Image (cartoon, rainbow, N blue to C red):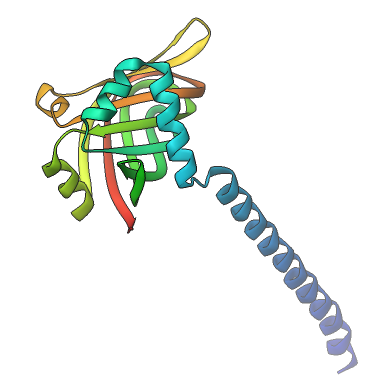
Length: 195
């Protein structure tokens, strides 16, 4: 019986140490999640700032904003890949300078590519029917993208079908990081919350 007690005591101490360690790991995980949320969380103010920056960068975008029914604004999107890649962002659907919904963009891509970047993206919605569609159900879109370096900065061009351009114009800007390649992208836009 004494032998069992001697073996049991270190075992209990070991279990207690493991539990304490797991509790510390759980707290570290929660802290990391909170840090990621605060660094990548977007607010309506970020969407308004992204729209203003786009207007400043290109006068054509100011015209496009005026002609559009609404804008889908992702102030902080991320994309990364090596042959296969992924992208993710949360943002807002803006109409007349106000948010009408929170929206999520997620997707994957395939093609010769390497790297990762953070960027801002605005999709100018040109028809009421497309806005209704995006607001009512997840919307899937296929597009191409060409990413390259020019004068020391990363650039991305979107390649869309001509029929789609009449409904939606997408502009990527404010890029950091480096991504090079040409890909076919599948994106899903999904409303998270309506206002």
